[in-house]
Length: 205
Picture 1 (cartoon, rainbow, N blue to C red):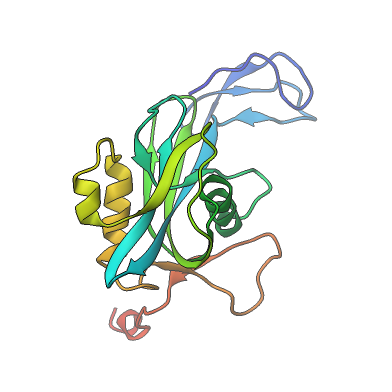
Picture 2 (tube, helix red, strand yellow):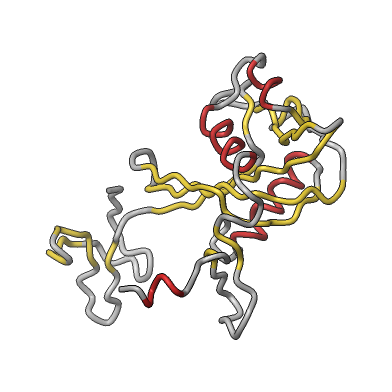
């Protein structure tokens, strides 16, 4: 867990308390009550599929900067702390590749420990809407739609990106976790679930 010295709320030096089965950094000011549970981040990427001459192709960008400059990956980035997930991945795809796309469902996610934070990386499937791939020659060195066969001959396609593309191509669109837009939801919530779940299975137990 990352260490901080002062309370980010009131700037009081932090102490250690036993909470939830482990020692945690905590603010001793009882009026503040801050407890440091660690640093967390959410990353998102999108599999945007487009059919060309009867072949499914996925949008990839080539990294222009370190780390991993020159490798190919799904377009994506970090979710801002005031941003909803589906809007974040749609924004990142347009910013990095100039392509407009609309979220269909979540096809996979990865949880990683280590590094500066505990990270969740969400892989979305999106419908292609408009635009041709572009790159800025700074953050991105190239961009385009590629088939799995073409990726097999390309140098530096990241494994997690290819795996996510396979998840999207080999499964039915909408079969993953989809955004629930029915009923009343909190205005700053997004709820994702399975749409083809059979309620009868619950009655069998």
